[in-house]
Amino acid sequence: MGRNYWLDLFTGKTWEEFKKHGANISGFRERRRKLAKEIRPGDYLIIYLTGLSRFMGVLEVVSECYLDKTPIWQDTEFPVRFRVKLLHELTPKTAIPVQQLQDKLSMFENLTSSNAWTGFFRGSPAKFKPRDGEVIVQAIEEALVNPIPRDYDERKYWRRPRTFESAKVGAVTVPEEDREEIRPPDAEPKGDASKSGHEEIQWLLLRLGSDLGLDIWVARNDRNRTFNGVSFASLKRLRPELPRQFDDATTRTIELIDVLWLQGDAIVAAFEVEHTSAIYSGLLRMGDLISMQPNIKINLYLVAPDDRREKVFAEINRPTFAKLKPPLPRVCKFIPYSGLKKEIEKIGPRVKYMKPEFIDEIAESCEPDEA
Image 1 (cartoon, rainbow, N blue to C red):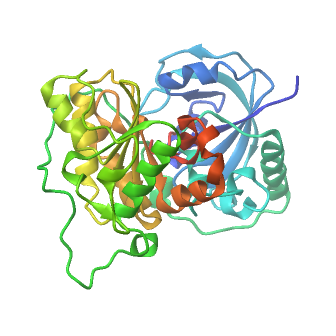
Image 2 (image 1 turned 180 degrees about the vertical axis):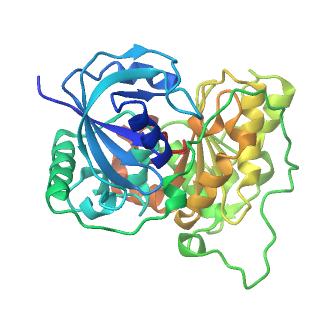
């Protein structure tokens, strides 16, 4: 059985703490324990600096996975640990920017949006394809022989790792009429948002769900909306009402979610479309839902223009949402307009043979970089 290559995320701060402790123990968050158990002695951990988006070095795993909370890192524990051997180390200045290798790495192929590749680097460990791992290790070895100095931002290097402390957060409510932010006439949305409106994306999601053979639901206060002169209410498989499996407060929240896909009485996916709004309205509804039903099993998605991606990630990782139990960034994913439209066009008439889970393949995790 060959060697596997794994992503190991560090900030500059946690990397310096790793070296100060002896550079022989690397760790991951406890919720990554199941995946970490797949790592074996002889595998390589490829060091990626999250603040700089650069490959920094290579560690060889020399032990099985074990749990240990002995302090190594100041800001968090990373208790799922391995004993490691530091094989290669570059400096922050000579570390390799990931985009320098974009023509050679598979995560840059067939992108649904320009930033979709970042999804792979939002949590570790993550398993590289063998060829990707070999390419990165070779590039690091070459950089040791022929280093290329590049400037970097010290503040980004020394940033602290983001954490999710457990905390109970009360539900927050968004008025029904708070659907979209009011903008002056000259403040038109940019990029894909100027070509695709809220109603178009809602319509595409509703049609896609119906074509997949699922029942669909549109937000109660959007039933009279139309797209290209066709009423949402005329769509086949549109449910007149939701299954009564939740309490009244939860049902009122779910009724206002932009689009739902249902299979029998089960809600299999929920979509909030954030076109020109301040992002908050959809996130607050989803936050309410998790606060009231922490064990609910619904796939949550925030659909927004490509150029609003960073705004989505910044808002969903605010403490209000990140401290929910479970954290909203862990259970809600981002779908860019371009990715949704491209996938629908690519599938075409094959859609009736697809399973609804395919939507997850074009969605991007909203969890922050681990380090």
